[in-house]
Length: 123
Image 1 (cartoon, rainbow, N blue to C red):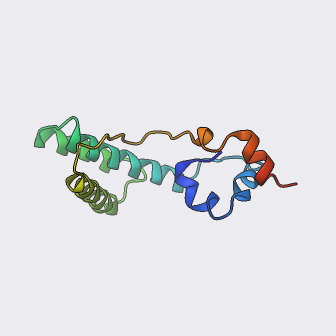
Image 2 (spheres, rainbow, N blue to C red):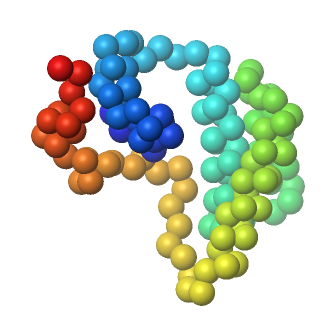
């Protein structure tokens, strides 16, 4: 219910998370486009920090992304900006940072269901 990607919304309007529960989560072209952009970003970050491919293999993987239905050339630009930002953060760190890429975050440890229900129910 409290996904990291929607934190900008539920942190400003906590009841919105409960309100959204009553609506079906339908797939859309926007969702597919966002998922593809995240896949490209994940690939680039993992390639830069964990599993570096040679130039030929890297370019072949990018070509596969470019063939996807919801691909947009701007995705490469934005994911490069994202990668540059992460590289900058890593360089600023005084110690080797622990990195996770595209991980699901469970906020239930910080916002247990019983507290969430008592404070933010729609009643």
